[in-house]
Length: 525
Image (cartoon, rainbow, N blue to C red; front, side, top):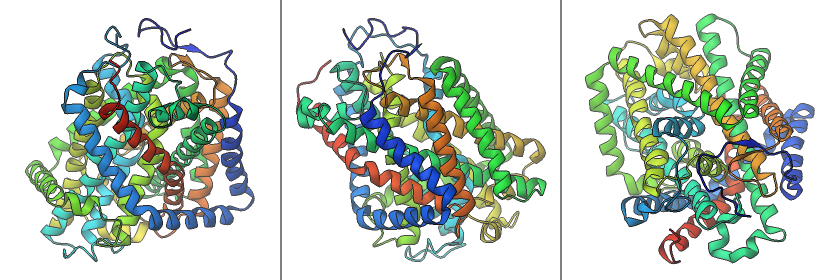
């Protein structure tokens, strides 16, 4: 039987007969579930293990993160803008299921999590004010106009074309190998161009796919933890309710319940609808801020920031921390690369599932170019407005972050907007939706990878999605409640780095696999 149905618009059905891949499910769940139990029994030990893994992985492997991120960017650029972009995923007769707008909403919100909202204000301000020593080795004086442009450029570098290239490359490799070369829907299947079918047999599929599951589970836990810290700080700043274990527990129950129900409802009834709502909230917030913000400064600072990034492309892109220093490179750029790489292999499975019938060029437009452009607009509008206000004395966001942690600046920023009483709760809802739409797609991908021979149009068993959701939620709560650290989100950063390092070498092999399949092997159209 073919793995692919004849038409791309076949209904999504729940998998009721597929067996569980015990070689993936058991080791991954024992580690993640064991981490959740350890967090309950001895939260300090879990924090210490995570911290040591964070520091060791980024110090020792920072150079590899930088090289592979640039390699991914180069590869996706070539396949997008050459004749390779004309290849259709699923063959020349394949028909896409989703419209461009629906497809883009699912791709954008499925991978965006809480990051752009969390750091679109906070990250540029942290750089600008040199709050944690980020500007020490840059030669730029904090608090100056030059620092503002540097802050914007560095933020755009961390959040646009480079990281989305990682998602896109992994997704393309999965989609092409599954739809065009008829491999199984798995991470191990993407490595057959390098190792042949033997990599899909024996112990190797279990090892490779287990690493991918671990990476995304830790990455999701870190994203959920960051969301808890951010929403909790917003509740405290705006409504005077002190954040702490009780508030975080309530939030984790709400958010976990939301993304779990969405995942259980399936791709069309759950994820698709939530993505559509989430994307519309994003669009409205963006338009509102463009209208009421300092429009000219937004345009000027975004343009200048892009120029500064392009001017420093190679030095930023290949510096593992020796030039820029650990405060800037390890705690920001390499942390970002770690969490993007942690998400990439399983995010790739989700992006592949919803891309049947599209050409590679269309795939890259939706999953690489447009999300990067969206991030440029988002950081330009929110970050540009924040930098403008900081410089003209409208609000002292630097002091807010120094006193209340790395994620606190957003709420002081929003409080100074017209209609803040309306905008702030909308942003809180957007944060919750942002994580939920990313988490439901990833929980589904984890459950898919834990199922034998599942097709792209089948839903994994609900119990698998449920237990993964609960385990991830417990770890996230523990790391926020007991390992916040100086920045308030140190614990979740540790988890992100662990996730990225767990799957880094798998991602490196996926990059090599892409080179071989598109530039050396015969192309399967």
